[in-house]
Amino acid sequence: MTKKLPIAAIVGRQNVGKSTLFNALARQKKAIVDSFPGLTRDILSVTVTHGPASFILSDTPGLDINDSSELSLAILANAKSYLEKSSVIIFLLENPNLTPFDFELYDLIRKTSIPSIVAVNKMDSNADLENMANFYEVGCADILPVSALRKQNINLLLDKIIGILPEKKQSQEKTDLKIAIVGKPNSGKSTLLNSFIGETRSVVSDVPGTTRDSVDEYFAFHGKRIKIIDTAGLKKKSRIKGNVDFYSKTRTLESIKKSDVVIHLLDARTGITETDKKICDEILEANKPLIIALNKWDLIQKDTNTFSEFRAEVIFKLYRSEDFPIISISAKEKQRIHKLIETALGLHEKAKKRIDTSRLNRLLEDIQNKKTMPLLGEKLKIYYATQIETIPPRFKLFVNNADFFKKDIIRHLQKILQKELDIKGVPVLISVEGKKK
Image (cartoon, rainbow, N blue to C red; front, side, top):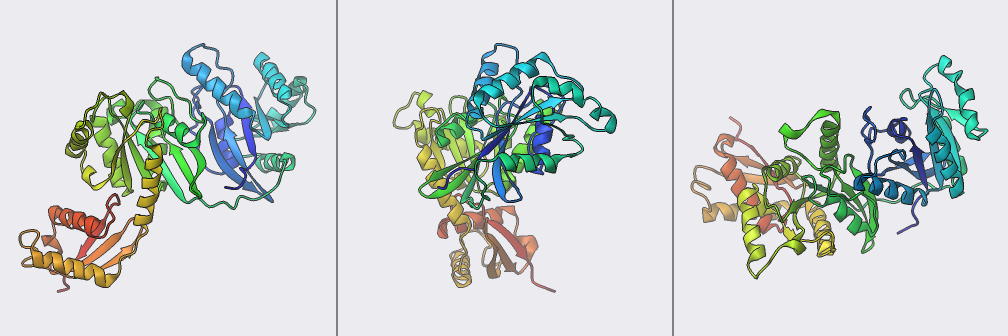
């Protein structure tokens, strides 16, 4: 894998507009923005290309967290560790004045010896610009006024970032596989992401709902460049309260749609819950290849029948789960996480498979001749079939009467095609068209 791009990290107090600036520089709404302080907990990253160069832009949590809870300390430690890897620090201040913590934070930044850019946010009008004199007290002669909300001076800020980068190159790396890790709160998603990449990237805590945004990271596996997306834990609809939960769910569903393969993480200690069922329905609705991972398997008392019994429970409670691979893992102990990646790569290749039309029609003719379902081949006739799409495979059947092909018939055909075409684990989509009258 080629050398990683340089990192430009946005740093500042809570609620100064770091996430809004992050979205403006990235030209996309990736970070959740809300007036609630301390919203960002993990470090969000995106690749930005501007002019001759690309870099990784990162949004960090507000560093003025003043409580001593275990979660807060973990957030601060993770953020400060990440800053040490940065090539440029964007120190964001807030109109109209400096605060005592701003002086402390800028002193901390100077001690890192990492090049920095000082910007003042919420400079939305000419009247606001009159406050610029207030900020030179921090000890920096070159301060840039910006409005992240109105996108003012954003290109100028990008120019300054590019000018400081230690090396200027455009990102040309292609991603071979995008995996979304999905599950209910506290199922171990962030631990799994950290285990994949071999370092602490997402904050791990026993506090449910620690991850609020979707966190992206890349790593190499057997010559493949893989993007892992750690998503916010999905909650039951009745438990979604306020903008933060709503946008967390929206980001998670977007991550599922943009992924190539989804890992649905289940907590083996709690068994299958109603929330797990709802999450599985969302994944199936997106028509994505799926791996069901039974996490925290190291904490389960086991005998020779434990896995087969748990697998039977999953198949019984989660609709269509028998179509997909079920793997027991321990994200914390890194048990069978290589198997997860190997399985995901295999599913992605299967999803791209194109079936020869003659082979497909011979298979369907054989199914009808064997009368694998009552009336199939008699009252229900398939005249011809063709594959019209890949990722996932989509087939169109030309039949005598489309109204005859109810859900149970389509489901039966899906299962047979998955098995006979060796594409188990990949959704099979079937549409039917009746005979023209």
